[in-house]
Length: 366
Image (cartoon, rainbow, N blue to C red; front, side, top):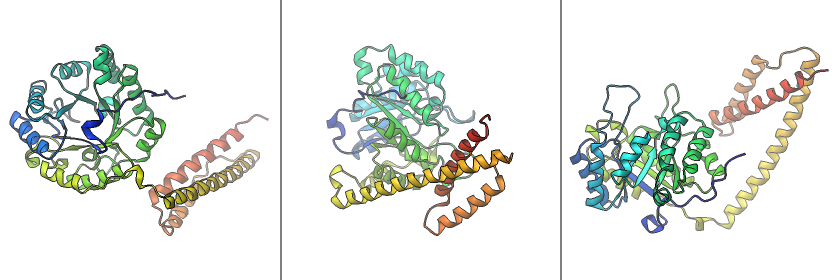
């Protein structure tokens, strides 16, 4: 049973963005007043309406630049006065929340490390619940996905903030940490935000291609992928001098580079649907039904194998058979232009369900 988020409001009033994607841009960290204002001036000239800047920046390991802290909130206030842009920053505690709101910050977000900690999220939620009702109803709060690929943890954090009375609620997809070497800093695992959108259709979801890719050269392509999948906006890190940035230098772009990236993105509208697209979708629906029927037949055979193993006192999992099957199927998939990761994930899920059903049969008492 999932909570129904039945009265989520748009993050911002319609005139702010109209039909355009929401874009939040600004430096990873607010490093100095000059850096903040120079970046903000250039972004405002390029049409950006929301300036993001990190004030508190705890890093994975101590010793690096961890943000200026509270004094930087005043710089964001000057950005608002000077450019008219809304301002946004990350909060990781109730104390951060109270300081940010006292300084007039317009948009708040909860970072990936904080989302992973229900105690910290509840601390922030308690602070939000204590606000006057008018402020609770008007302040946009965005929740980044947790560092680990855990959809339930992400939804749990969103639910805590929703229960605190926040209705301008949104999510930020910034990818997931993964051990080992990868092309992207935080692999997207797109199926997770897609499932989030399926579970909570009214929830705005914004993509953070800066943290997904970890390098500025990936921002454009990841942004386009996000818009192609119907994401509601983008959060992109922009710095007036990325080479000298004190945090995440490799993933920040200049305001001019950001303008070029945004200008090159293709926008999609509901009116682009056509009769031929509808026909293609109907074909997919029919194939999906066929796939489900085939899976049903496969599981029936798996249960028959389970009964055989029970009668002959055999172990359910035959690792040699599984390894051979996986390799053969992945090789077959390559000839059908299917990626190895995609097929491996599907086969793993099918095998897991087959094992579950066989264990159920083998554990039954006579």
